[in-house]
Image (tube, rainbow, N blue to C red; front, side, top):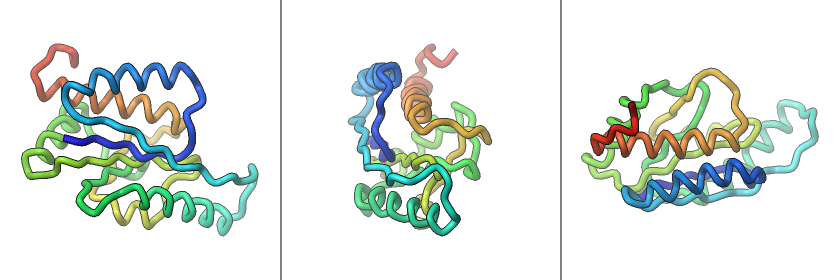
Length: 159
């Protein structure tokens, strides 16, 4: 099984890197896990809607270039489906049962994901209606992927 995160921008904070590295190390017993970073588009603080659309489109092109046809894509989006940890674990288990051994999660930049990325996604996942920094979302997602594998293996970690 291959789990990939395609994310916009670099991770700068050491504490986020340390947390993600810890869960990535733990995940290595269950899957091949990797994070692919694409550059974020530099943009001024205030943008018109057309400029925002252009930024998202450019980031979206970079994201899509990192996704292969066979990959099952889960886009993180506020408007996506909210799942419990148990439901998320079952989704991952069901995907592998039905032949999806390459699962790719996508986390957009500060403006979100371009419509073309959402169109490519097989599933949209929401971690709630909060707006979270995408650096923090990487850590939360990595932990939840690890938690899903632990749930599926019957481990007490989840309790």
